[in-house]
Length: 318
Ligand code: BDR
Ligand code: CA
Image (cartoon, rainbow, N blue to C red):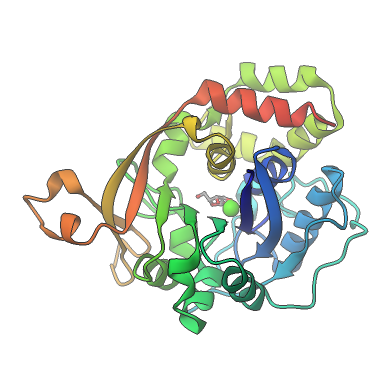
């Protein structure tokens, strides 16, 4: 049985790769896409999701619900310098035929989770504003989601927007804190594991170019700005923070280990706002809270070769 999935996304760069996996992998049944504040302008992110659905040949088959366009408390912080002004590598694609739904993403999340308790998996690959707003409105949904996969935070690694914080949690730390306290079954994939295991090198990118499919060309266009941005911060290749998570939902063997932890988010630190404070059970002797209050499993590693093979398979489908 395929995984019944909703993807909550700030569609730009690797969010697109992740959506392609969710749209085209036979082990995933993508039921809805919800749009959160994040990488680039909100309306642009909606268009990027719709265009990605069209590129996957799935136009009109997966609804796109616009959600919260600003964080709960923070001012919005853009990442267009990472992904291009349009979030698509400055490609400025035409508008897709499919249009967004009128219903708000938060309403769609609450309705869909309540209609299928224990059935739906969520991949949250953006600031957690929509998920937090949904669980504030209906706290019962936390126990009804099968697994909430979250891309965000840092574990054994510096952040990518401040030394302490990763972008998704930095943009809306209050939302992240609410989500980690809400009682979801959470699997967290942090920025550190992405940098260690989720980068495709120049050689890998050449293999993608050689596929010479419409989707391979789309991938190269969407990811060209992030590729040159990464060079400026010493990362050689294209980073896949969101798509490694979609890949491990499709093929669980892509995650090489999970550690039960207590995760909390710093909302007030002078230098550390948005930092993920992760306490593994292994440190329970130092702070008992870890065993008493495990609220997430944190990903310890990704099988890069398997991830690459899965992504190439998806990009060769059209
Ligand atoms: C996260 O931030 C965004 O720019 C990416 O889409 C990803 O979800 C990585 O920190
Ligand atoms: Ca994202």
